[in-house]
Image 1 (cartoon, rainbow, N blue to C red):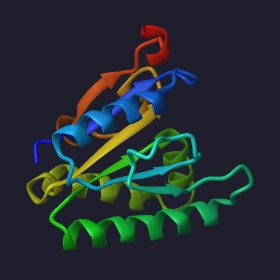
Image 2 (spheres, helix red, strand yellow):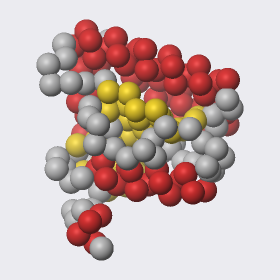
Image 3 (cartoon, one colour):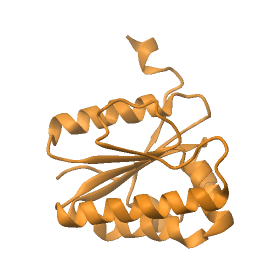
Image 4 (tube, rainbow, N blue to C red):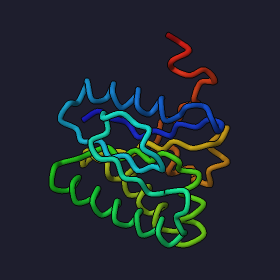
Amino acid sequence: MAVSNLVLVGKQCQEKHDWLTHLAKEEKKKHPEMKIFLMGSGNHYSNVFDVQIKLITGNSSFCEIVSNFESARDYFYEYARDNAGALLVIDEYTLLATVMRHEKQDYLRQMLMYITSIGHSAGINVWISASSDKTCDLNLNRSFLSQMKVLQAPARTLTSKQ
């Protein structure tokens, strides 16, 4: 599986979810057997994502978000382990990281470090979408970022290109 780890950064309202969907469709064409998991805050994604896990709703408490994350993480790991790989897409990383930093700081960081350092050899990869202009605002260490492709979301939307 030749999927890369990826960080997609861009300002709020830059349609990053559209770019994630587009990129996921391209990966599905190359790797139709790959299962793609999405952890995010909404239901505005296409069916290209095999499993969509809504972590955050408008009135979720920090504890509920952490609990949802832990369940989703365990489900993803179990599937990836039993099926020789998968792709995890985390949308709204900035919001999730803020909540996790507030409640259980190491859970998210440990998961990302595991996937980027040894997960690729097992066919496990991660994509992150974050509302930020640059990766230094994301509080991710250099070791982690060295294992990632970093893309800046274009200012124009996909639909405006057509």
